[in-house]
Image (cartoon, rainbow, N blue to C red; front, side):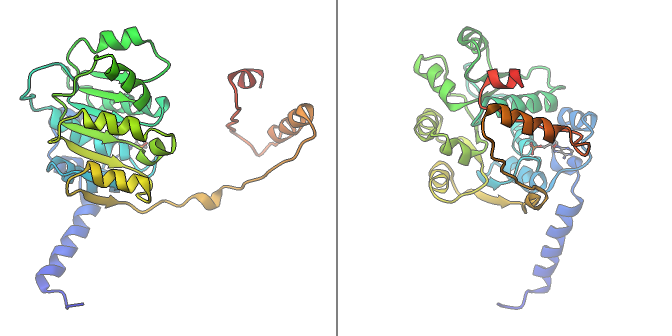
Length: 281
Ligand code: AMP
């Protein structure tokens, strides 16, 4: 390694310092976005936000690895909202930004955050396109100009196939939890959706890993992407896993009853395989 020049050292120090002390106000975000962040109680950007937002605002494509809880949703929504504060140059009413998520629950979360950050942007319209909700409602929602669509790939494809969505105005495409979408078998849907969007769009990809198919897809969808990675907060060590064997359903219920009576348990989450079982429980 060549010895770093004095200038290089300073630049490194500056970068380090910049990430440590960066404030939302330093990010060139619109005052309506800044005031929404302030009322949401956000004091400063998380590391993934500090690294991603300036790159995304500069128009770069991105491949970012960050876990849920890192603030990744704001990392892609804030620069996208900032982008949308400039008027579209294209006519039409199709979405200007699209977020694809693997599940309805994540879509709902992303939409809720978008509405929170855009609450002072009165003109802003978002529509959620997910399975399990009424087609009629979604089609009506798309009949007016829309800024942001948050969608799961399956339902979005259904609407595309019936000619209800026009991506001509699309400027930003985001894939959230891209690896999970591929695990769930959405690769063909994603490729079809992306093919319908303009080639000059900005593409922001978020995934826990870039190994295998998701890395291949990422390279196909992005142009000279900035690769952003924040350190994993490894809390796996705090989870103790136990497997209990039971003779039958009654025995299982008695075991569960016993576990839940443990005075050390303040809160518990129980997953069941069906709705009926969760209601019985
Ligand atoms: P996410 O990783 O996007 O699921 O975000 C995790 C949680 O952190 C969400 O409840 C966000 O509202 C919240 N959050 C995101 N960014 C910030 C921030 N800069 N300051 C405080 N809370 C934040």
